[in-house]
Image 1 (tube, rainbow, N blue to C red):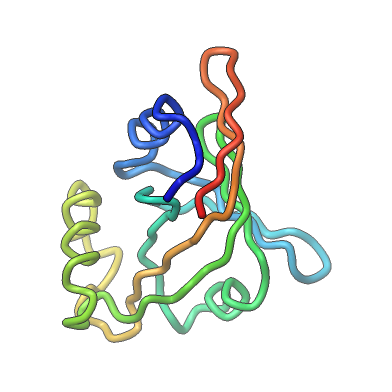
Image 2: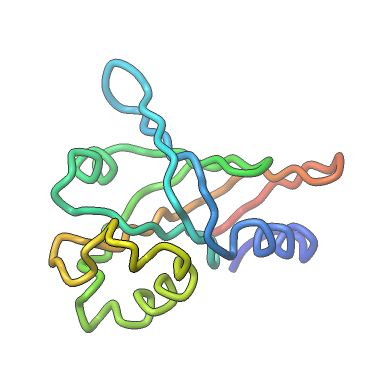
Length: 140
């Protein structure tokens, strides 16, 4: 259960409990890599749709990562949940379909491809700022 105030929980849900661009940063290698992705926040994790054969997936699962969004930063770990089209992923896939409805069927991703996957970025802790207040967040 998240260890932070109801006010912080409300802010996180309002800001990120929908289709939002977030920055995802990798710490491995010679230099940091940052990429903007569409993400959705729920219960201490961000969810994104990605391709399992991409170089970023191999890197993401091997090293710690960070995410940042509107006045929010956190670090975490990436877990590949598997193919978007797998029966076991029907519930999260439907939620992502609803959240990303504005673009999900635009041809950017082939949701029937076994390599189009759901990635969960689990967050142990983070920092959120709102209206001059700083919130230390514990997600575990």
